[in-house]
Image (cartoon, rainbow, N blue to C red; front, side, top):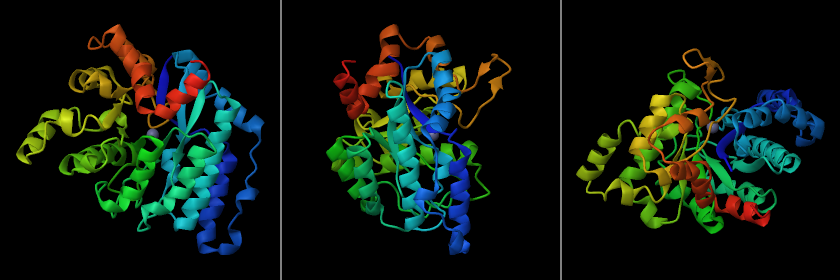
Amino acid sequence: MIIDVHGHYTTAPAALGAWRDLQIAGLKDPSQTPSAADLKISDDEIRETIETNQLRLMKERGSDLTIFSPRASFMAHHIGDFQTSSTWAAICNELCYRVSQLFPEHFIPAAMLPQSPGVDPKTCIPELVKCVEQYGNVGLNLNPDPSGGHWTSPPLSDKSWYPIYEKMVEYDIPAMIHVSTSCNSCFHTTGSHYLNADTTAFMQCLTSDLFKDFPTLKFLIPHGGGAVPYHWGLFRGLAQEMKKPLLEEHLLNNIFFDTCVYHQPGINLLTEVVPTKNILFASEMIGAVRGIDPQTGHYYDDTKRYIEATQNLTAEEKHQVYEGNARRVFTRLDAALKAKGL
Ligand SMILES: [Zn+2]
C-alpha cells in the first residue's frame, strides 16, 4: 500500500471560497456574516471535485490512500478572531470528513485547528476532540505562526502549546507543522513562508528540551524539512555547541520528514541524509507547484517517481517510506486499516 501523508482539499467546490469571502466581509459589516448553515455543498459536488482531481492523480501515479486535511493556505488563522477561526475550521474539517466518508478506501482525515493570533492554543482542544472522536481524524495540522508571517507566537517549545501536546499524546496522534498564507509581503506563501516555517520548527525543537517533557510527541515536518537536510551539518554542529545530545537521540525519535520535494536531487539528498525510518511518503498534490517539469516531462509534485528512481533506498526501505513509517507514526491510521483487515 502506498500512503500519501500530505494532501489538502485544494479543489473544494467554489461555494466554500465564496462563503469564506462573506465571512471576511462580515468582519467589517456584520450584516453580511453568513451562518455555517448557509454553506450548501452536495455529496455529488464533493465526489466530482475529488474524482476528477486528487483521486484521478492517485490512480494515475499509483498511490492508494491520502491523509487529507483542509487547504493549508486557506486556514489563514490571522483573519478575524477566535470565533472566525472556530467557525471556519469546523466547516473545513467537516468537508474533509465527508470526503473520507464518500471515499473511505482512499482518504482519511486530518484536522485543521481554530488557531488565532494571541489566543491561548488550548482553545483549539474542543475542535480537536471532535475531529478525533467523531470524525476519525488520524492527525492534525499545527500552525506555529497563526499571525501569517509575522511570528508573534512563542516558539513550539513554549508551555502555552503544552495543552495541545498533552491531547496529542493522549490520542497518540502526530501533528504536521504547517503554516498558512503569508500576509507579510516579504514572504511568499509557499516559496518562503512554508520552507522558513519547516526550518524554524526544527530549530525550535533543537534548542529546547521539548521531547524530554513529551517523549512520545510526534511532529511531521513537511516539504522535506525545508532547509534541514541540506544543512544537516550546521544543525549537528549547533546542537553540539549547545551541549545537546546527538540529533538522532535528541530529535529523531519525535521528528519526521515528508517527501514533498519536487526534484530528483532533492529526494536523493533527503534519503541520503535523513534516516529512512524518519521519512514518510507524501506529494501535497495539486498544491504549491502544479505544473509539469520541462526537464522530465512529468508533474513536479509526482514525488513517487523520485522515490522509485533514487539509488539510496532498497526495496524494503521504499516500503518503509511508502507505508511502514506512516503506519508507525499515524497509529490511528494503522488501527483503522487493521480494522478493515489491511
Ligand atoms: Zn501542505
